[in-house]
Image (cartoon, rainbow, N blue to C red; front, side, top):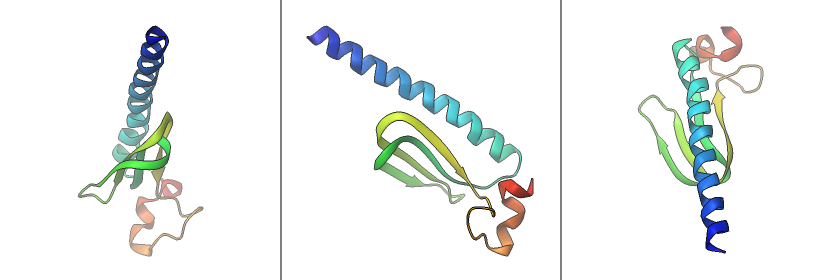
Length: 92
């Protein structure tokens, strides 16, 4: 039984690392292209850790570590202030 539990925990940790590296690639390219990132999240569901950086990006780790996402500013989806439109994904 402990072997199965160990394998499950190892799988979740490995998947979390893989997701973090993958999503960081999206984050890095967006920032290099001048797109404002609203949220960098590892996992889905309720947030268990959250921090807002100096640039206004919200970094979160959520309860279900089976994926992640990078939310970029996009004026097709959200109302974006005129002062930030040049930072929107759809304007690049």
